[in-house]
Amino acid sequence: MAIIYSYPLDTTPQTGDLLIGTSIADGNATKSYTIASLVGLVNTQGGTGTVRTVSTADSTFISIAGGPITDVGTLVASLSAAGTPSNTTFLRGDNTWSPASTTGSPNIQVFDEGASITTAVNSFNFIGTGVTATAVDNAVTINVPTVANAITSIIGGTGITVDQPIGDVTITNSGVLSLIAGANITLTQATGVFTINASNNPGTVQSVVAGSGLKLESAAGTITTNPTIGIEYSGSNNYILIGQSIAVATENDSLAFNQLTSSNVKTTTFSTLPIAALPLVKTYIDAGDLNVVKNNTDTFNTTATVNNVVTLTSAEYTALAAKNVNTLYILDAATPPAALVITLTPVTNSISGPAAGYAITGAVANDTVSGIIGEPYTFTTIVTPTTGYYFSTSVAGNIVSGTIAATANVAQTLTGTVALLPTPAVTATLQVVTNIQGGPSSAYIISGNTTGAVSTGTAPHTYTFATTISNPPSNNAYTWLVAPVVTNATGTISGSQTVITTITGTLQLV
Image 1 (cartoon, rainbow, N blue to C red):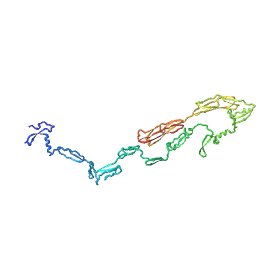
Image 2 (cartoon, rainbow, N blue to C red; image 1 turned 30 degrees about the horizontal axis):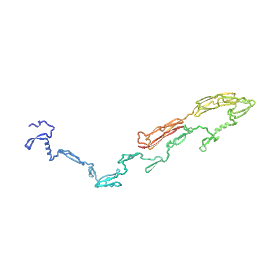
Image 3 (cartoon, helix red, strand yellow; image 1 turned 90 degrees about the vertical axis):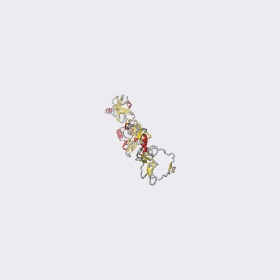
Image 4 (cartoon, rainbow, N blue to C red; image 1 turned 120 degrees about the vertical axis):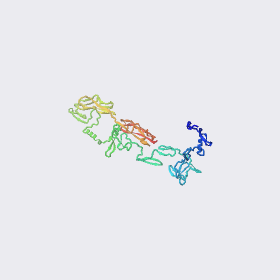
């Protein structure tokens, strides 16, 4: 018989492979056995049954560990219930350790809107119209009928937000949280409706701007706060310059004056001005009338007006070194002096500036004055600036005078400079007044022409400002409930002044 280790080694035996062995029951006869028969024999000898392995599986309430077991091992079983077992808890049907009350009632908490009512309820009693509760054995049915027009969801409106539309909804006021009355403001409310009253300023005036001939008394306030308007006495907007309208005064026109005795403004007319009110004029007139022969019937202007009369002979007249133009000399008729003629030759016009800027009247070329030797003569040419012009250099040479010595011609040369009246520069200064309700100034942007912008020109000056308003791109908290309206300042002014652009509108939270 071959030695066993001399045979080749089979590393993958099969249960059907054969093994050599000795059968004691057959008198120690040599026989062959299958590997499967030996395995079955070994497993059978371990017990009297046919179980070869034991596996484990958890149930709803029991967890088992330790399997599977094919030879020997230990199986460990434990409860799978949640909670903590103790002398105050019991295993409920839902596989949970829960506390039990000492009275036998379930230890159940009851809440109302999140606030605890009891921690160990004994019973429930459902009352109220429409709610019914029925029981079959221990099964209780509570019937809450559907309410017509029941609320199915809550949606936040303007100024209101909700964390969710259904379920336990939290409603938050995202708009006005409170109203606090400021200075000169009172708040009253009835059934939730608030009324805001301005106790000191019930009107709607937003600002006051000084117009033509007026000014804002800056020490008293601003155009929007306690403004005081006064008369403008200086600059291009002074009340006389701004309201000028050139006219010739008549005797019935009125003059305003401060009455010294009452310190009140009174009026009078030119015709009722007493001469005592014009002492300088009275003195001038009195001095001129002193020792003067009145001649109020002479309507001719070819010779000088006679104020004095002297009678004398021709020799005496000739002997006079100087003759007075306003004196009438009566001579001896036996030897009357010969009449002499002074003639004005063509006038030489050397006035600088536009000819349309003035008009010439009075003495003209070929005008004459007749008289005797020693009698004075005068030729007066009147040069008047037309509307819109003035003489920057006064007119000279328009008066030619002298004493008659013989028949002769006299010349006249006009000089001077005429120019346009200077037009004062005026400035319109912009003030933007906003009347935006419902939101702060940070909720909008004012652009274009803003407060302090100016428009300058000569009077009368036409100005136009363009201001715009919009929401800032980064601010989405507010939107326009009433769209803004911009009333831009535009017009014509004759004096420097502040002009107003107004902006109105109403904001609301998004």
